Image (cartoon, rainbow, N blue to C red; front, side, top):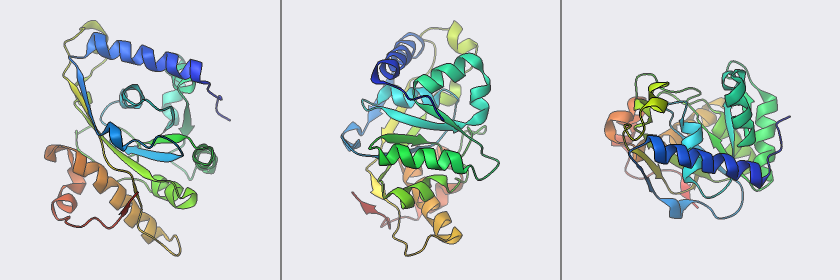
Length: 231
């Protein structure tokens, strides 16, 4: 069971994150805020370049969200407390974590936003890797729209140098795409889940500069008419 966050604790952490961004970054840009649903459950899916991504993305959103994060992040005492106060809960990437999936579905059913990183871990070579099907399965089971988010330049953030060099880190960019639904499916098979996952990841890759697209570069280059339906 995750800690049940309240607006006070959530926004206190978010404003602390924003303060850190002001102090340590040269700046940040956010495009597509008009695409954020104002109400109702939604699944935010993003690429992952740095452990700071699960903090920076909530820092640029004006809606509260919960975060599905790898369980290893909760082994660090200070980070664990901050993550839980901001609404994060752990997932075991090495198994079918049914508890985490149920928690995710409950969050969506409650009309809240859920942040997921389908790659499962940060990219160490600065390009996208194949996504896991969890976000697609949750989208099918909840009927919630998917909100693609691209983030880059966080790969240049390095601890402890990050904290020792105020205003010396590159400008971080975040682009929020239009919400969409995965392709319709009469029955959710493993093949359908993979196809939906690829569709989700291509939506994210389309928002990134070409050099970050990795395994989805060719698919994005060949796209003309996306199969998924906009909200």
